Structures are given as structure tokens and as C-alpha cells.
Image 1 (cartoon, one colour):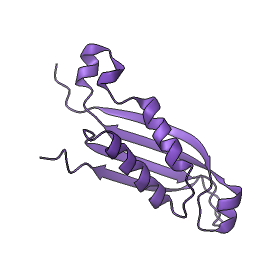
Image 2 (cartoon, helix red, strand yellow):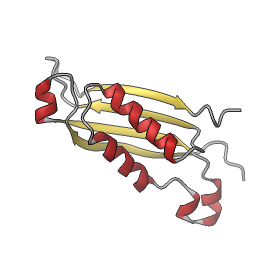
Image 3 (tube, one colour):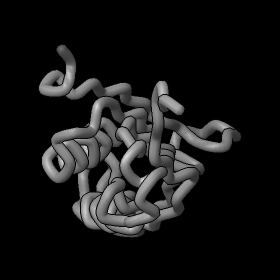
Image 4 (spheres, one colour):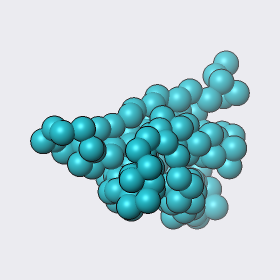
Length: 127
């Protein structure tokens, strides 16, 4: 068996954080969801059944939690920090697809949220 591609994914992880352009947003905070899909070769873990052979999703969550705890004005900035942190921790990661959503954004619209999506490619793994 050959694995064509594989990913570790955290889906709709909820956070309370102090991000926003408006000072009130950084004081009161808001609700956010994060979906993070990380391209990672899991073929060793498929055979070994050993967490040391994969990207540990609990560690992935903890890194995202730490970055979400740092107040920022822009979702783009937070998302970029999360992506950079993942690439720094696991240089063998090939891609990252990340969606960070601010629920109930203060813009006078009735919507589920406003999001930023990043598709990152690790240029160190691209031949």
C-alpha cells in the first residue's frame, strides 16, 4: 500500500481570545473557531502504531492555543503566527490549510462569522 497524501486535522476548535481592531474587542474578547489541516506523511505511523511517528494533534492544539492567547488586531496576523509555529516545530510538514473565524464580528451584519483562510506550502519540502 502506498499513501498518496495524508493530513492531520483539527476541526472547528473553539477559542475565546482578545483579537480585534477595536479596543473594545481586545478588552472584552470574542469567540473564534480554527480549522487546521496539516499535510504530513503518516506512513510510518500507519505501520508502527507509535505516536512518535506522527504529528501529535494534542501538541498541534497546544501550539494553536498558545498563539491564540496572544492578542492581535488582525486575524491574518494570528493565522500567520500559527502557520509559522507549525512549520518551525515540524519542518517535514508539506502544507497547511488554516481557517480562522471570528464569530459574530462587530460589523452590523447577521452572519456566522468572518474568516481568513491561508494555504501555506513549505518551500523546504517542495522539490
